Length: 500
Image (cartoon, rainbow, N blue to C red; front, side, top):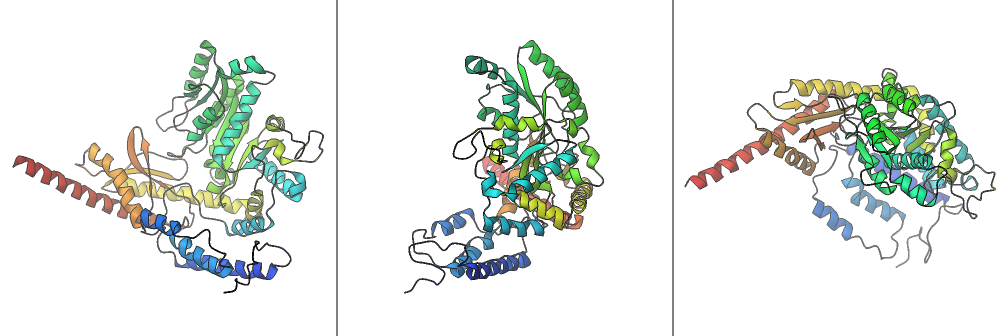
């Protein structure tokens, strides 16, 4: 049996001048298969069990000879595309996964084929300037006249790098025992509503076990500036050093924005590094109607932004933007084979925690040029408008309880009609989510609010209608109703048996 015509025995088939016809053919087929799946999607996921999915993947023979392009695309179609989770579907309501701008998807194909790495200038050339231009543009939107920064893999890495730079600023000029002793006194002030990556970063940075202090929040989950002042006074009394204050512009659960202007004023007066995690809320930068929610962000020293949340970008597309370009140099590390100290070239690795790094800035460029910043902003406003409409639907529902307000596009709620005890409603949260996930018809998330479990919707699709979400909520309520009835029936049967 001869090998398929696009496979050369004993070596890979590369994308080069000799394979352009095969490249065109395979890309065309891949695009056609993907488009066909998009056109046929009826639910956000399938009902295939995790066990069956694992078995299908385990059955793939990774040591067999290559099967060729057409066959591998058929396998990918049947193995992966047939079981994909579709974020664009109106019943996908779970996590911070947005549907995608079509121009960014096209740019993704470009950057994958060219395979630019933007760590050094000689590997990327114009890519270096594209990334720097995008960072400068975002900095302008933030109110940073001389911004610097770098694209990262996501908000977790952006937060880690921001706190790493804050640590280096706090330890500047120290070495050896003095540096180690001071590091153990460093403290990060944030709220319990902040992203888990803040606390995880403290661990990775080698700070003390109690380095992360929680600042009290108001009734809506926003950081209380007066409580921040109190915590800073307490640190002074304990001879601890405030390394950074980490505020949030769009908390993961409630979707609220901390009072950035007031927090920034406190940080300025106390000369503390002010970091804003705007991974979720960064879309407000281009919002025609809600940009004011970010008032005060220009006082931040560092800002995390996730374009793959509210700029409709494919993952990964995040950035850390710095108000002061000098801070970017705190991450600099030289290697003779990569970015020697005497190099005059604009090497992006000088200010990145990563070495090899994707040219993700190209996708955002494509969206800004193909769709436009104003259209993105209208999309952001649309999903927040949708959340307001859905809040009204939940508040008016006889069986659902709305649990919190939001600035962005989350909906926190639970099924608990009159007469259903708190404990029973608590138990149902996880069961409802599991039943819906196993069906594949509606995908929702769960979390804990004020110590009690609840269900969560994260709305990121500007083309979804409130009526579509309302229909999904009826499925949630129906599933909860059936589960509760079954649970009550089991309890009655147990009680009856015990009475005998």
